[in-house]
Amino acid sequence: MDTHLSPDLPPTEPSAVAEDNLPISAGERCAVTLETQKLEKRHRQIQAQIVLPFSPEQVWQVLIDYEALADFIPNLAKSQRIEHPDSGIRIEQIGVKNALFLKFSARVVLDMVEEFPHTIYFDMVEGDFKFFAGTWILQPATFENAQGTLLTYLLQVCPTRLIPVKAIEQQLGKDLPQNLLAIRKRLYELYCP
Image (cartoon, rainbow, N blue to C red; front, top):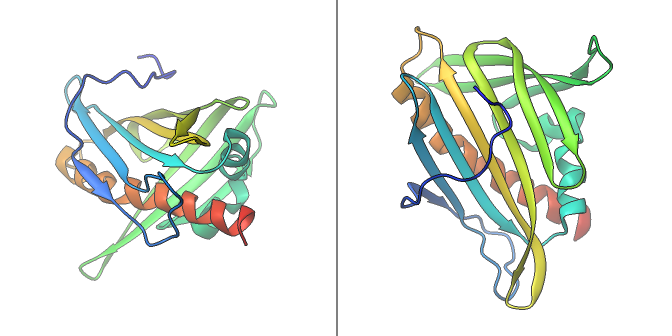
């Protein structure tokens, strides 16, 4: 399966929309759209998008600050760069979720490939999923004469047999919009103090 994903999903209606309460400039869309596509067997492809009133270079700097991601991404307890055997970029992330007095966690070790300033590929080399790979895509966007970035998060995931696919779909459907809005908030903190 190709881990260098493209954002070409068939047209579907967005399945989730989230909004935050940060200032909105003229013409700015602060909604996150989310689409889920069933692939082979238990594999799913999920695409989340948001338009940000920041340059691709500014968004890029937030995304590649791997050590700081756990400081502002909800439910990300740990994000750290670790040694890569071929001097590439490898990060370890641990996500934690509390639900009904239970604590769930998932760990992934990801190899990252950066193509500045438009694409960041990630591929799980170790972790709690059968398959986990995706792409961050940063595209310049113009809306009502303002410059910004269309940020797309594209993920292909397959849980292990112990985790129901529907549970992963539902959890990612809640978490991904929150994560993109957290990135938006971080951009405002860094560039519009």
